[in-house]
Structure formats: C-alpha cells, structure tokens
Image 1 (cartoon, helix red, strand yellow):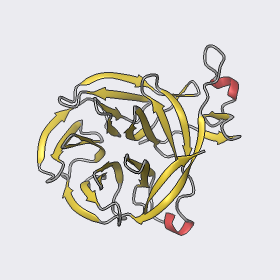
Image 2 (cartoon, helix red, strand yellow):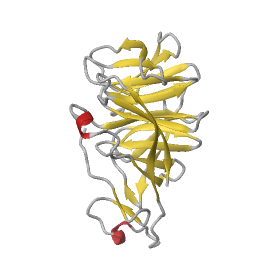
Image 3 (cartoon, rainbow, N blue to C red):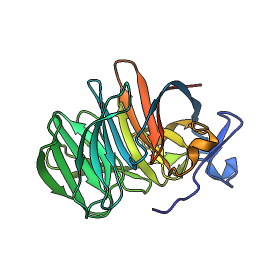
Image 4 (cartoon, rainbow, N blue to C red):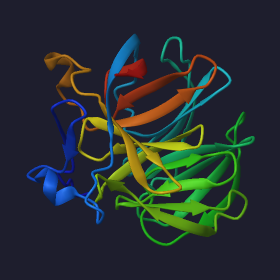
Length: 264
C-alpha cells in the first residue's frame, strides 16, 4: 500500500488541505472553500491491545468488539472484551489471505481481503463460516450503514454494496476541500456518516456519503508515548458504541486501544 501525503492542519479550522497546497488551489469551481470542522481526540480510557494484531477492521456490537487482523499467514478474526482488551474468541484465516475490513450485517460478520478479491462471512456468535463473495480490485475498509455496505480500496472512492449479494450498487468520490482524498482505509458507519482512517496518517475524517465531502478532520496524533511506539505500525481501526456515543480507536501492532470522543 502506497502512502501519499494527503492533509495537514493549520490555523485550527481556517484551512485544511493537502500538504504543499495553497488555499486558492483547493477552491471549488464556485470559488468557495467548503468548511471543514477541526476536531481532536479526547481520550476517556486506555485499555490493552494485543501486540500481534495488525488491525484492519474493528466493529462494536452489544458489549463486544470484533477485530479483523491482517498479514499473510497471520490473519485472524477476533472477539475482544472492551473492558479489558483481552481476546475472548479467535479464528485463523486461511494463510493465503490477508484479512482487511470488517462489518456486521445483522448476525453475520463480513470480512474482506486485500488482494484476493474475496469477502468471507461468519456467524457473529460462533464464527462458523458462511457465504463467500467475489469482487474486483483491492479491499481495504468496510462498514454497514443499516441499508448498504460501504467499502474502500485505498483510492479516493467509496463503493456501496448490497449486503445480501455483495454486488456493487454505486460509488462516491471523496473530496477534502474540493480535492481528492486518497488512501481511504478502515471505515465506520455512524448515523448516516462514514468515518475513515487515511492510510499512513494519524487523523480521521468524517464523510458525507451523499456528496463525498469531508465535513470533519479529527487529529489523532500523540496517542502513544515514544517508548510505546517501538515496533508499531500504522494508525488504523475505528468502532462506535452507540450506547455511550464513544469511539474505540487503535493501530496495527499497537499496545493500546483508546475509548474516545471527538471534540472541538
């Protein structure tokens, strides 16, 4: 996966654009610059995170966290205790697959794969395998908005998919200040919006899927201390608990997971 510098923050919410751009370069055709809220992560609680989890997908349901962890010959599906971070259930994925994003559709978990163009389904409670679907291209992030699946592939586009057949039913280009926002990774659908990690960056964005416009830029830098960053990989993983209205975020091979809110 290629990392492309995408965005930075300057002067709070006054200007948000790609590195090296001027505000004038990111104007829309009408000349207006779409407003993007600048938010930060407010950490409510820290909990341990297994250091062997190369986090690609994270899903909350009914006091449980489900995690899809990647890497070839080491991919897994896990159920975590959100109070302790401990792994309560684990299943190895076939060694030829690199697991990626994860979504929950009713009582089925749907897990996509990086380059093998396969999506696997599992029973939510037993992890018993179900149907397998095929798709074209790479798989990165996945979430379910209650009606359709939303999928990323590392580009600036979101693909909408039928939750029963996994067929593509549309797509949307994502723009930050009028410019393409590439490297969209792990996704979380919340109240009609899509939150996304951006590969290689320590920020999140909130996307309006109807227009593709980024409405919020969320700075998530500085979560780990310097000594905790030894051996880690990229920031990735978002899950939302609707009961507490809090998010769980973490990263690949990170020693911690964080329960947070996004605040101005």
